[in-house]
Image 1 (spheres, helix red, strand yellow):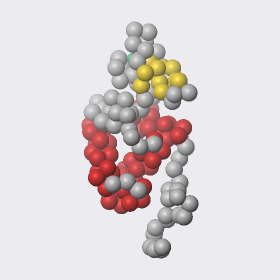
Image 2 (cartoon, protein in one colour; image 1 turned 135 degrees about the vertical axis):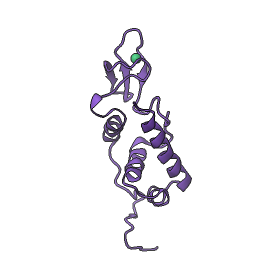
Image 3 (cartoon, helix red, strand yellow; image 1 turned 180 degrees about the vertical axis):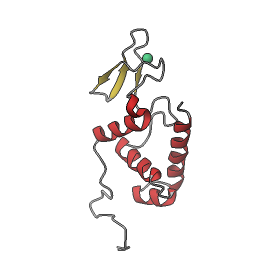
Length: 128
Ligand SMILES: [Zn+2]
């Protein structure tokens, strides 16, 4: 068992204090839409219903009713990682932590961290 200074890896199999699913969802909404709030990626309507049981939005435009999440219509699509973990990784990337260091901290492949960083960039550039 190594004890490297600066490493906060615990012994309980939970090396990082991830936020709750709800908090991660809110963070993603803020990241994606900011103060504008959730916007339908299909028709652009900001009128929507929230389906709490599925943690999704349903467009309030009667001609649309598209169901979407904060990652719909971004490079993320349907992320494979649990949202709290994905958000923690995104926060590290935003804090300019290196892909290698981020990957190590969250137990993912450095290439995966790099791909997430690329997707974040692509998603932001896709915004007006
Ligand atoms: Zn819509």
